Image (cartoon, rainbow, N blue to C red; front, side, top):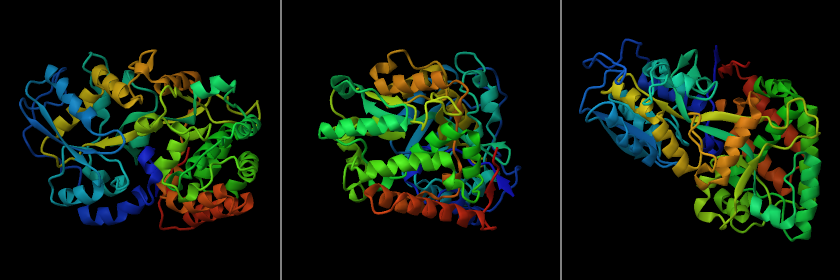
Length: 467
């Protein structure tokens, strides 16, 4: 059996075993109700303003992951939903440990109407697949501005939430990956953001002359450098590099595009271009060495980084993102190519008391007003196009994300295998050792290949459907 793995948001980067690890026990606990086990409450006839037939004055029980984005953006829905359906109230309950807290409700047959299925304890999708509403009708509905929702969102945003052909997870946030720097600091020193790894190495030498480092890392986020490696290698060597990794092929980590980047990274480690002590530093404290203390010039991350470090960023930092570096100036994919994916998956359980209300909440979130509010307050784009103004609500990071998406055009890709198989925790160990200088390039390559081989050779593990 093969599966389509959903893309995973920034919290997943710090997670160990995720969907595949959790799905077995959860499926046993919850059972496998048929598609006929949906909510048996009264159904109201739908209309253009109320396509799902939500009852007036009804309440929507929403369990929302309380992480880096908080929960207030879902609360905001209450400001717009009333324009379509009178009296509907979205009751938001912040949740940190999604699976432990909500599993008993699935078992008891009374799950929430809407769940932001995110965080370290995300519920494995395959374990509850038959208990979730398919959400195609949300995309087919018109938004609050009267346009078909499918026509207002970025391309391919349904794919991350599609499992075994069923679109059950509506990923709301558009995550853009890149390398981040302070525009103010660079301009003050006459530095140019690097496009190739040789340029990055040269920048590292310039940083040392100023008593600074090129990079910094924290123990829980050492694999951010793996993300930067993979993304750059895919651009350099083409889609075959991605496919080899996704398929867990033998020697996939020895591909030239990967090794060429690792050679430069190894040189950077040897020449002490990383802030020391990263393997013993909590990741947000390490990031503050970059965003607040400016000990380091560059940091690889997703677009969540500005919001995450909002309280620990130097004034007038002007956080700006660029695509990952390539080895040569003529890679197989354009330098402007980026990894970007829809994340923060929302699900609507069939057994919810107000299934229609759960879907209507998503429709409200996809309105221009609600999407613009999210971008304004969280400094990140949603999947809804055209809701970020040219000034990015004063956020240079949001402006650069929008520009990267526009410059990439159709050259946008995604990487699924690491989190689909819950490999990140194991990979953190060799990456911390490598970035600390305790493990060389060959040792890192061998360690990563062993992790891939273990999954590939385990017939009990469902494999990704790779394309």
